[in-house]
Length: 546
Image (tube, rainbow, N blue to C red; front, side, top):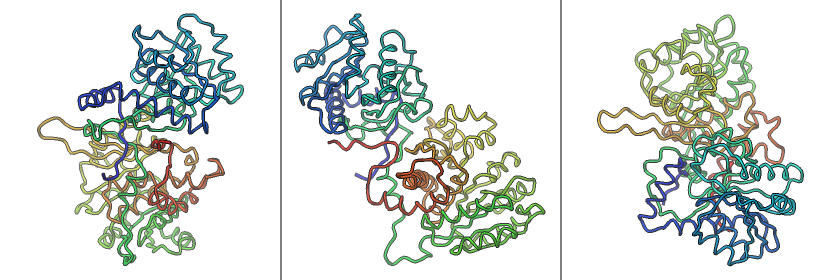
Protein backbone atom coordinates (compact mmCIF):
# COMPACT_ATOMS: atom_id res chain seq x y z
CA UNK A 1 0.00 0.00 0.00
CA UNK A 2 1.19 3.57 -0.64
CA UNK A 3 2.46 5.52 2.35
CA UNK A 4 -0.25 7.38 4.23
CA UNK A 5 -0.58 9.85 7.04
CA UNK A 6 -2.20 8.83 10.32
CA UNK A 7 -5.85 9.75 10.78
CA UNK A 8 -6.73 11.80 13.87
CA UNK A 9 -10.23 11.20 15.23
CA UNK A 10 -12.83 12.51 17.63
CA UNK A 11 -14.43 10.24 20.21
CA UNK A 12 -17.54 9.90 18.05
CA UNK A 13 -15.49 9.00 14.99
CA UNK A 14 -13.56 6.35 16.92
CA UNK A 15 -16.81 4.81 18.14
CA UNK A 16 -18.09 4.72 14.57
CA UNK A 17 -14.88 3.07 13.40
CA UNK A 18 -15.22 0.39 16.07
CA UNK A 19 -18.83 -0.27 15.06
CA UNK A 20 -17.85 -0.53 11.40
CA UNK A 21 -14.97 -2.79 12.37
CA UNK A 22 -17.35 -5.11 14.21
CA UNK A 23 -19.64 -5.15 11.17
CA UNK A 24 -16.66 -6.30 9.11
CA UNK A 25 -15.86 -9.12 11.50
CA UNK A 26 -13.42 -7.65 14.05
CA UNK A 27 -15.42 -7.75 17.29
CA UNK A 28 -15.09 -5.33 20.18
CA UNK A 29 -13.73 -8.18 22.29
CA UNK A 30 -11.06 -8.92 19.67
CA UNK A 31 -10.04 -5.25 19.54
CA UNK A 32 -9.92 -5.17 23.33
CA UNK A 33 -7.68 -8.24 23.50
CA UNK A 34 -5.41 -6.80 20.79
CA UNK A 35 -5.23 -3.47 22.61
CA UNK A 36 -4.37 -4.97 25.98
CA UNK A 37 -1.67 -7.19 24.49
CA UNK A 38 -0.15 -4.26 22.57
CA UNK A 39 -0.04 -2.15 25.73
CA UNK A 40 1.58 -4.96 27.70
CA UNK A 41 4.19 -5.52 24.98
CA UNK A 42 5.03 -1.82 24.89
CA UNK A 43 5.41 -1.76 28.68
CA UNK A 44 7.66 -4.83 28.61
CA UNK A 45 9.86 -3.23 25.98
CA UNK A 46 9.98 0.13 27.79
CA UNK A 47 10.97 -1.50 31.09
CA UNK A 48 13.44 -3.89 29.47
CA UNK A 49 11.50 -6.88 30.80
CA UNK A 50 8.79 -7.19 33.45
CA UNK A 51 9.69 -10.29 35.46
CA UNK A 52 9.52 -9.17 39.08
CA UNK A 53 8.36 -5.65 38.19
CA UNK A 54 5.67 -4.14 40.43
CA UNK A 55 2.80 -2.86 38.32
CA UNK A 56 -0.39 -0.97 39.15
CA UNK A 57 -3.32 -0.85 36.74
CA UNK A 58 -5.73 1.99 37.49
CA UNK A 59 -9.09 0.62 36.36
CA UNK A 60 -12.27 2.50 35.48
CA UNK A 61 -15.80 1.40 34.63
CA UNK A 62 -15.81 0.77 30.87
CA UNK A 63 -13.83 -0.61 27.96
CA UNK A 64 -10.77 1.46 28.82
CA UNK A 65 -10.61 -0.27 32.17
CA UNK A 66 -11.13 -3.64 30.47
CA UNK A 67 -8.21 -2.91 28.12
CA UNK A 68 -6.09 -2.23 31.20
CA UNK A 69 -7.16 -5.52 32.78
CA UNK A 70 -6.11 -7.39 29.62
CA UNK A 71 -2.72 -5.65 29.75
CA UNK A 72 -2.39 -6.55 33.44
CA UNK A 73 -3.19 -10.18 32.71
CA UNK A 74 -0.38 -10.44 30.17
CA UNK A 75 2.11 -8.61 32.39
CA UNK A 76 1.27 -11.03 35.20
CA UNK A 77 1.69 -13.95 32.80
CA UNK A 78 5.21 -12.67 32.06
CA UNK A 79 6.15 -12.55 35.74
CA UNK A 80 5.19 -9.05 36.93
CA UNK A 81 3.51 -8.43 40.31
CA UNK A 82 0.28 -6.78 39.15
CA UNK A 83 -2.40 -5.06 41.22
CA UNK A 84 -5.59 -3.77 39.63
CA UNK A 85 -6.79 -0.76 41.61
CA UNK A 86 -10.50 -0.21 40.97
CA UNK A 87 -11.32 3.50 41.10
CA UNK A 88 -14.96 3.07 40.05
CA UNK A 89 -17.53 0.29 40.06
CA UNK A 90 -17.12 -2.41 37.43
CA UNK A 91 -19.99 -4.32 35.75
CA UNK A 92 -21.39 -7.24 37.73
CA UNK A 93 -20.57 -9.56 34.83
CA UNK A 94 -16.93 -8.79 34.13
CA UNK A 95 -15.07 -11.48 32.16
CA UNK A 96 -11.87 -9.43 31.79
CA UNK A 97 -11.68 -9.00 35.56
CA UNK A 98 -12.35 -12.69 36.09
CA UNK A 99 -9.58 -13.68 33.69
CA UNK A 100 -7.14 -11.24 35.28
CA UNK A 101 -7.81 -12.74 38.71
CA UNK A 102 -7.45 -16.27 37.31
CA UNK A 103 -3.93 -15.32 36.18
CA UNK A 104 -3.04 -13.98 39.61
CA UNK A 105 -3.68 -10.25 39.25
CA UNK A 106 -4.39 -8.86 42.73
CA UNK A 107 -7.17 -6.30 43.24
CA UNK A 108 -7.61 -3.31 45.49
CA UNK A 109 -11.12 -1.86 45.36
CA UNK A 110 -10.68 1.81 46.26
CA UNK A 111 -14.19 2.53 44.98
CA UNK A 112 -15.57 0.26 47.69
CA UNK A 113 -13.60 2.01 50.41
CA UNK A 114 -10.58 -0.28 50.59
CA UNK A 115 -7.59 1.55 52.03
CA UNK A 116 -6.08 4.54 50.28
CA UNK A 117 -3.08 4.04 52.57
CA UNK A 118 -2.48 0.63 51.01
CA UNK A 119 -2.67 2.24 47.57
CA UNK A 120 -0.08 4.85 48.58
CA UNK A 121 2.26 2.09 49.75
CA UNK A 122 1.83 0.27 46.45
CA UNK A 123 2.60 3.45 44.52
CA UNK A 124 5.75 4.10 46.52
CA UNK A 125 7.23 0.74 45.51
CA UNK A 126 5.85 0.37 41.97
CA UNK A 127 7.84 0.43 38.75
CA UNK A 128 4.92 1.03 36.39
CA UNK A 129 1.44 2.57 36.59
CA UNK A 130 -1.01 2.19 33.71
CA UNK A 131 -3.89 4.69 33.64
CA UNK A 132 -6.95 2.94 32.17
CA UNK A 133 -9.62 4.76 34.15
CA UNK A 134 -11.58 6.97 31.74
CA UNK A 135 -11.23 6.75 27.97
CA UNK A 136 -12.62 8.90 25.18
CA UNK A 137 -15.82 10.85 25.58
CA UNK A 138 -15.43 11.53 29.31
CA UNK A 139 -14.93 15.23 29.96
CA UNK A 140 -16.53 15.93 33.32
CA UNK A 141 -14.39 17.20 36.20
CA UNK A 142 -12.56 14.54 38.19
CA UNK A 143 -13.73 14.05 41.73
CA UNK A 144 -13.80 11.62 44.62
CA UNK A 145 -11.62 8.51 44.52
CA UNK A 146 -10.51 9.07 40.91
CA UNK A 147 -9.27 12.56 41.66
CA UNK A 148 -7.53 11.49 44.87
CA UNK A 149 -5.85 8.51 43.25
CA UNK A 150 -4.44 10.60 40.40
CA UNK A 151 -3.22 13.31 42.76
CA UNK A 152 -1.36 10.61 44.66
CA UNK A 153 0.29 9.50 41.40
CA UNK A 154 1.40 13.07 40.71
CA UNK A 155 2.71 13.47 44.25
CA UNK A 156 4.76 10.27 44.24
CA UNK A 157 6.31 11.13 40.86
CA UNK A 158 7.25 14.62 41.99
CA UNK A 159 9.02 13.16 44.98
CA UNK A 160 10.93 10.27 43.43
CA UNK A 161 10.64 10.38 39.65
CA UNK A 162 9.09 6.93 39.75
CA UNK A 163 7.13 5.03 38.61
CA UNK A 164 6.86 5.01 34.81
CA UNK A 165 3.39 6.33 33.96
CA UNK A 166 1.54 5.20 30.83
CA UNK A 167 -1.94 6.32 29.77
CA UNK A 168 -4.09 3.91 27.83
CA UNK A 169 -5.56 5.78 24.85
CA UNK A 170 -6.23 9.07 26.72
CA UNK A 171 -4.93 10.34 30.07
CA UNK A 172 -7.81 10.37 32.55
CA UNK A 173 -9.19 13.90 32.84
CA UNK A 174 -8.17 14.97 29.32
CA UNK A 175 -11.00 15.76 26.91
CA UNK A 176 -10.20 13.63 23.87
CA UNK A 177 -11.86 16.09 21.47
CA UNK A 178 -10.77 19.51 22.76
CA UNK A 179 -7.59 19.03 24.78
CA UNK A 180 -9.12 20.57 27.91
CA UNK A 181 -7.59 18.87 30.94
CA UNK A 182 -8.37 18.49 34.64
CA UNK A 183 -5.91 19.90 37.16
CA UNK A 184 -5.61 16.44 38.74
CA UNK A 185 -4.38 14.78 35.53
CA UNK A 186 -0.69 13.94 35.97
CA UNK A 187 1.84 14.32 33.15
CA UNK A 188 2.38 10.97 31.44
CA UNK A 189 5.63 9.48 30.23
CA UNK A 190 3.72 8.14 27.23
CA UNK A 191 0.15 7.87 26.00
CA UNK A 192 -0.52 4.61 24.14
CA UNK A 193 -3.09 5.45 21.49
CA UNK A 194 -5.35 2.61 20.40
CA UNK A 195 -5.93 2.64 16.65
CA UNK A 196 -5.80 6.37 15.93
CA UNK A 197 -4.69 9.47 17.85
CA UNK A 198 -7.53 11.48 19.36
CA UNK A 199 -7.72 15.17 18.44
CA UNK A 200 -7.44 16.37 22.04
CA UNK A 201 -4.04 14.74 22.43
CA UNK A 202 -2.69 17.23 19.89
CA UNK A 203 -4.33 20.31 21.43
CA UNK A 204 -3.14 22.36 24.38
CA UNK A 205 -3.34 22.48 27.32
CA UNK A 206 -3.94 18.72 27.38
CA UNK A 207 -1.08 17.96 24.99
CA UNK A 208 1.29 19.01 27.76
CA UNK A 209 0.21 15.98 29.82
CA UNK A 210 0.47 13.38 27.04
CA UNK A 211 4.21 12.65 26.97
CA UNK A 212 5.37 10.58 24.02
CA UNK A 213 2.46 9.77 21.73
CA UNK A 214 2.66 6.13 20.67
CA UNK A 215 0.13 4.68 18.23
CA UNK A 216 -0.59 0.95 18.61
CA UNK A 217 -2.19 -1.32 16.04
CA UNK A 218 -5.29 -2.97 17.53
CA UNK A 219 -6.43 -4.84 14.42
CA UNK A 220 -8.94 -2.48 12.84
CA UNK A 221 -9.62 -3.67 9.28
CA UNK A 222 -7.53 -1.79 6.72
CA UNK A 223 -9.15 1.44 5.57
CA UNK A 224 -12.29 0.94 7.62
CA UNK A 225 -14.38 4.13 7.69
CA UNK A 226 -11.43 6.47 7.21
CA UNK A 227 -12.43 8.24 3.99
CA UNK A 228 -14.60 10.76 5.84
CA UNK A 229 -11.96 11.70 8.45
CA UNK A 230 -10.55 15.10 7.50
CA UNK A 231 -7.74 15.38 10.05
CA UNK A 232 -4.33 13.70 9.73
CA UNK A 233 -1.00 13.53 11.53
CA UNK A 234 1.99 13.78 9.21
CA UNK A 235 4.20 10.70 9.05
CA UNK A 236 7.77 10.44 7.76
CA UNK A 237 6.72 7.67 5.37
CA UNK A 238 4.17 9.91 3.69
CA UNK A 239 6.62 12.81 3.49
CA UNK A 240 9.25 10.56 1.90
CA UNK A 241 6.71 9.38 -0.67
CA UNK A 242 5.89 12.97 -1.70
CA UNK A 243 9.33 14.55 -1.98
CA UNK A 244 10.55 15.11 -5.56
CA UNK A 245 12.91 12.39 -6.84
CA UNK A 246 16.54 13.29 -7.44
CA UNK A 247 17.53 11.41 -10.64
CA UNK A 248 21.21 10.88 -11.42
CA UNK A 249 20.96 12.79 -14.69
CA UNK A 250 19.39 15.88 -13.10
CA UNK A 251 20.78 19.41 -13.20
CA UNK A 252 20.01 22.71 -11.48
CA UNK A 253 17.15 23.40 -13.85
CA UNK A 254 15.50 20.15 -12.77
CA UNK A 255 14.78 21.51 -9.32
CA UNK A 256 13.22 24.83 -10.12
CA UNK A 257 14.00 28.50 -9.65
CA UNK A 258 12.56 30.29 -6.62
CA UNK A 259 12.23 34.06 -6.39
CA UNK A 260 12.32 35.39 -2.83
CA UNK A 261 11.24 38.98 -2.15
CA UNK A 262 12.26 39.74 1.42
CA UNK A 263 14.19 41.93 3.79
CA UNK A 264 14.55 45.59 4.69
CA UNK A 265 17.16 47.74 6.36
CA UNK A 266 16.00 46.63 9.82
CA UNK A 267 15.48 42.95 8.95
CA UNK A 268 18.38 41.83 6.83
CA UNK A 269 18.59 38.43 8.50
CA UNK A 270 15.09 37.37 7.45
CA UNK A 271 16.03 37.59 3.77
CA UNK A 272 19.20 35.57 4.34
CA UNK A 273 17.36 32.85 6.25
CA UNK A 274 14.69 32.37 3.58
CA UNK A 275 17.26 32.03 0.82
CA UNK A 276 19.54 29.81 2.87
CA UNK A 277 16.71 27.43 3.75
CA UNK A 278 15.53 27.33 0.14
CA UNK A 279 18.98 26.22 -0.98
CA UNK A 280 19.15 23.65 1.81
CA UNK A 281 15.76 22.22 0.80
CA UNK A 282 16.99 21.51 -2.71
CA UNK A 283 15.92 24.33 -5.00
CA UNK A 284 18.08 24.37 -8.13
CA UNK A 285 18.30 28.17 -8.21
CA UNK A 286 17.32 30.89 -5.75
CA UNK A 287 17.09 34.59 -6.57
CA UNK A 288 16.78 37.01 -3.67
CA UNK A 289 15.17 40.40 -4.38
CA UNK A 290 15.89 42.93 -1.61
CA UNK A 291 15.99 46.71 -1.26
CA UNK A 292 19.15 48.03 -2.89
CA UNK A 293 20.77 49.12 0.40
CA UNK A 294 20.31 45.58 1.75
CA UNK A 295 21.75 43.92 -1.36
CA UNK A 296 25.50 44.28 -0.56
CA UNK A 297 24.95 42.89 2.96
CA UNK A 298 23.06 39.77 1.87
CA UNK A 299 25.28 39.25 -1.17
CA UNK A 300 28.30 39.00 1.12
CA UNK A 301 26.62 36.23 3.11
CA UNK A 302 24.91 34.25 0.34
CA UNK A 303 27.47 33.22 -2.25
CA UNK A 304 25.18 30.67 -3.95
CA UNK A 305 22.25 33.06 -4.37
CA UNK A 306 21.40 35.22 -7.38
CA UNK A 307 20.55 38.79 -6.36
CA UNK A 308 18.02 41.32 -7.62
CA UNK A 309 18.33 44.78 -5.99
CA UNK A 310 15.01 46.64 -5.77
CA UNK A 311 14.06 50.32 -5.47
CA UNK A 312 13.54 51.32 -1.83
CA UNK A 313 11.99 54.07 0.23
CA UNK A 314 13.89 56.39 2.57
CA UNK A 315 13.60 53.91 5.44
CA UNK A 316 15.15 51.02 3.51
CA UNK A 317 11.90 49.21 2.74
CA UNK A 318 10.85 48.08 -0.71
CA UNK A 319 9.29 50.87 -2.80
CA UNK A 320 5.82 50.33 -4.28
CA UNK A 321 7.23 50.85 -7.77
CA UNK A 322 9.38 47.73 -7.32
CA UNK A 323 6.28 45.59 -7.93
CA UNK A 324 6.42 46.39 -11.67
CA UNK A 325 10.08 45.36 -11.80
CA UNK A 326 9.33 42.07 -10.05
CA UNK A 327 6.37 41.36 -12.31
CA UNK A 328 8.50 41.84 -15.40
CA UNK A 329 10.95 39.10 -14.39
CA UNK A 330 8.43 36.62 -12.93
CA UNK A 331 8.21 34.46 -16.09
CA UNK A 332 11.75 33.28 -15.32
CA UNK A 333 10.70 31.65 -12.06
CA UNK A 334 8.77 28.61 -10.87
CA UNK A 335 7.53 30.00 -7.53
CA UNK A 336 7.50 33.22 -5.51
CA UNK A 337 7.98 33.65 -1.75
CA UNK A 338 7.28 37.16 -0.47
CA UNK A 339 6.99 39.01 2.81
CA UNK A 340 9.70 37.98 5.26
CA UNK A 341 11.37 40.93 6.96
CA UNK A 342 9.88 43.53 4.59
CA UNK A 343 8.59 45.73 7.41
CA UNK A 344 5.20 47.41 7.59
CA UNK A 345 4.25 50.66 5.86
CA UNK A 346 1.80 52.05 3.34
CA UNK A 347 4.49 51.57 0.73
CA UNK A 348 4.92 47.87 1.50
CA UNK A 349 1.14 47.43 1.34
CA UNK A 350 1.12 49.21 -2.02
CA UNK A 351 3.87 46.92 -3.26
CA UNK A 352 1.89 43.83 -2.17
CA UNK A 353 -1.27 45.14 -3.84
CA UNK A 354 0.48 45.81 -7.15
CA UNK A 355 2.33 42.51 -7.03
CA UNK A 356 -0.51 40.18 -6.07
CA UNK A 357 -3.77 41.82 -7.08
CA UNK A 358 -3.11 43.72 -10.28
CA UNK A 359 -4.05 42.15 -13.61
CA UNK A 360 -2.81 39.98 -15.18
CA UNK A 361 -2.97 37.64 -12.20
CA UNK A 362 0.11 35.62 -11.30
CA UNK A 363 -0.17 32.03 -12.42
CA UNK A 364 2.80 30.62 -10.51
CA UNK A 365 2.58 29.40 -6.87
CA UNK A 366 2.92 32.27 -4.40
CA UNK A 367 3.79 32.00 -0.70
CA UNK A 368 3.05 34.99 1.54
CA UNK A 369 4.56 35.23 5.02
CA UNK A 370 5.26 37.68 7.84
CA UNK A 371 5.02 41.34 6.82
CA UNK A 372 3.41 40.32 3.55
CA UNK A 373 0.58 38.79 5.58
CA UNK A 374 0.28 41.87 7.76
CA UNK A 375 -0.21 43.96 4.62
CA UNK A 376 -3.18 41.96 3.36
CA UNK A 377 -5.86 43.35 5.75
CA UNK A 378 -5.11 46.83 4.36
CA UNK A 379 -6.18 45.63 0.91
CA UNK A 380 -9.88 45.02 1.61
CA UNK A 381 -11.34 41.79 0.24
CA UNK A 382 -7.99 40.83 -1.23
CA UNK A 383 -8.94 37.16 -1.66
CA UNK A 384 -11.69 38.14 -4.10
CA UNK A 385 -9.27 40.13 -6.24
CA UNK A 386 -6.73 37.44 -7.10
CA UNK A 387 -6.38 33.93 -8.47
CA UNK A 388 -3.67 31.30 -8.69
CA UNK A 389 -2.06 28.92 -6.18
CA UNK A 390 -1.51 30.62 -2.83
CA UNK A 391 0.10 29.51 0.45
CA UNK A 392 -0.23 31.65 3.60
CA UNK A 393 1.95 30.89 6.64
CA UNK A 394 0.68 32.95 9.62
CA UNK A 395 1.58 32.49 13.27
CA UNK A 396 -1.41 32.88 15.65
CA UNK A 397 -0.99 36.63 16.01
CA UNK A 398 -0.86 37.15 12.26
CA UNK A 399 -3.87 34.87 11.86
CA UNK A 400 -5.75 37.05 14.32
CA UNK A 401 -4.86 40.15 12.30
CA UNK A 402 -5.97 38.50 9.05
CA UNK A 403 -9.30 37.24 10.41
CA UNK A 404 -10.33 39.80 13.02
CA UNK A 405 -10.38 37.09 15.69
CA UNK A 406 -8.46 37.37 18.93
CA UNK A 407 -5.29 35.33 19.31
CA UNK A 408 -6.88 33.21 22.11
CA UNK A 409 -9.81 32.46 19.80
CA UNK A 410 -7.39 31.32 17.11
CA UNK A 411 -5.55 29.11 19.57
CA UNK A 412 -8.76 27.68 21.04
CA UNK A 413 -9.72 25.97 17.77
CA UNK A 414 -6.62 25.93 15.58
CA UNK A 415 -7.88 23.21 13.24
CA UNK A 416 -11.30 24.77 12.78
CA UNK A 417 -9.90 28.26 12.19
CA UNK A 418 -7.33 27.06 9.66
CA UNK A 419 -9.95 24.99 7.82
CA UNK A 420 -12.56 27.77 7.70
CA UNK A 421 -10.26 30.47 6.39
CA UNK A 422 -8.48 28.22 3.91
CA UNK A 423 -11.88 27.66 2.33
CA UNK A 424 -12.81 31.35 2.39
CA UNK A 425 -9.49 32.58 1.01
CA UNK A 426 -9.04 29.62 -1.36
CA UNK A 427 -5.48 29.29 -0.12
CA UNK A 428 -3.41 26.72 1.70
CA UNK A 429 -3.21 27.99 5.29
CA UNK A 430 -0.26 26.99 7.47
CA UNK A 431 -1.17 27.99 11.03
CA UNK A 432 2.19 27.84 12.76
CA UNK A 433 2.85 26.83 16.35
CA UNK A 434 3.00 23.60 18.32
CA UNK A 435 1.43 20.89 16.12
CA UNK A 436 1.28 23.27 13.14
CA UNK A 437 -1.98 22.88 11.19
CA UNK A 438 -1.92 22.84 7.38
CA UNK A 439 -5.37 23.29 5.79
CA UNK A 440 -6.30 22.69 2.16
CA UNK A 441 -8.61 25.05 0.29
CA UNK A 442 -11.93 23.40 -0.60
CA UNK A 443 -14.13 24.84 -3.31
CA UNK A 444 -17.78 25.31 -2.27
CA UNK A 445 -20.10 22.62 -3.61
CA UNK A 446 -22.91 23.76 -5.85
CA UNK A 447 -24.95 20.71 -4.85
CA UNK A 448 -24.81 18.06 -2.14
CA UNK A 449 -23.18 18.31 1.29
CA UNK A 450 -20.06 20.38 1.69
CA UNK A 451 -17.13 18.24 2.82
CA UNK A 452 -14.64 19.45 5.40
CA UNK A 453 -11.29 20.46 4.02
CA UNK A 454 -8.45 18.16 4.95
CA UNK A 455 -6.14 19.43 7.71
CA UNK A 456 -2.76 17.89 8.38
CA UNK A 457 -1.00 18.30 11.71
CA UNK A 458 2.71 18.35 12.41
CA UNK A 459 3.82 15.82 15.05
CA UNK A 460 6.30 18.34 16.44
CA UNK A 461 5.84 20.63 19.43
CA UNK A 462 9.35 21.98 19.91
CA UNK A 463 10.09 24.99 22.14
CA UNK A 464 13.41 25.30 20.33
CA UNK A 465 11.49 26.78 17.40
CA UNK A 466 10.21 29.64 19.58
CA UNK A 467 12.92 32.01 18.43
CA UNK A 468 13.24 34.69 15.79
CA UNK A 469 13.87 33.60 12.23
CA UNK A 470 12.58 30.02 12.38
CA UNK A 471 9.44 31.07 10.49
CA UNK A 472 11.65 32.47 7.72
CA UNK A 473 13.32 29.08 7.48
CA UNK A 474 9.91 27.45 7.00
CA UNK A 475 9.17 29.96 4.24
CA UNK A 476 12.38 29.02 2.47
CA UNK A 477 11.69 25.28 2.70
CA UNK A 478 8.14 25.67 1.47
CA UNK A 479 9.13 28.00 -1.38
CA UNK A 480 11.83 25.56 -2.42
CA UNK A 481 9.39 22.65 -2.65
CA UNK A 482 6.93 24.81 -4.58
CA UNK A 483 9.66 25.70 -7.07
CA UNK A 484 10.46 22.00 -7.44
CA UNK A 485 6.92 21.48 -8.72
CA UNK A 486 5.09 20.08 -5.73
CA UNK A 487 1.37 20.64 -5.21
CA UNK A 488 1.00 23.60 -2.82
CA UNK A 489 -0.85 21.65 -0.09
CA UNK A 490 1.65 18.80 -0.22
CA UNK A 491 4.61 21.17 -0.42
CA UNK A 492 3.46 23.06 2.68
CA UNK A 493 2.80 19.80 4.54
CA UNK A 494 6.20 18.32 3.73
CA UNK A 495 7.93 21.60 4.56
CA UNK A 496 6.30 21.75 7.99
CA UNK A 497 7.43 18.21 8.76
CA UNK A 498 10.99 18.78 7.54
CA UNK A 499 11.17 22.05 9.49
CA UNK A 500 10.17 20.31 12.72
CA UNK A 501 12.52 17.40 12.16
CA UNK A 502 15.40 19.74 11.28
CA UNK A 503 14.90 21.51 14.62
CA UNK A 504 14.89 18.16 16.40
CA UNK A 505 18.15 17.18 14.69
CA UNK A 506 19.73 20.56 15.44
CA UNK A 507 18.92 20.28 19.16
CA UNK A 508 19.87 16.62 19.44
CA UNK A 509 21.91 16.18 22.61
CA UNK A 510 21.84 19.90 23.48
CA UNK A 511 18.29 20.67 24.51
CA UNK A 512 15.95 23.30 23.05
CA UNK A 513 17.46 26.46 24.56
CA UNK A 514 19.51 28.69 22.30
CA UNK A 515 18.61 27.09 18.96
CA UNK A 516 19.44 29.43 16.07
CA UNK A 517 17.26 29.66 13.00
CA UNK A 518 20.35 29.27 10.82
CA UNK A 519 21.07 25.96 12.56
CA UNK A 520 17.59 24.76 11.65
CA UNK A 521 18.20 25.73 8.02
CA UNK A 522 21.50 23.88 7.96
CA UNK A 523 19.84 20.76 9.37
CA UNK A 524 17.28 20.52 6.55
CA UNK A 525 19.41 18.24 4.33
CA UNK A 526 19.80 15.87 7.27
CA UNK A 527 16.04 15.93 7.82
CA UNK A 528 15.41 15.09 4.17
CA UNK A 529 17.91 12.27 4.39
CA UNK A 530 16.29 10.98 7.58
CA UNK A 531 12.82 10.65 6.07
CA UNK A 532 14.16 9.09 2.90
CA UNK A 533 15.97 6.60 5.18
CA UNK A 534 12.98 5.57 7.33
CA UNK A 535 13.26 6.27 11.04
CA UNK A 536 11.08 7.11 14.00
CA UNK A 537 10.84 10.84 14.54
CA UNK A 538 8.63 13.59 15.99
CA UNK A 539 6.58 13.76 19.17
CA UNK A 540 4.93 10.46 18.32
CA UNK A 541 5.88 7.03 17.05
CA UNK A 542 3.86 4.42 15.28
CA UNK A 543 3.98 1.33 17.43
CA UNK A 544 6.82 -0.88 16.34
CA UNK A 545 5.53 -3.90 18.12
CA UNK A 546 8.25 -5.58 20.23
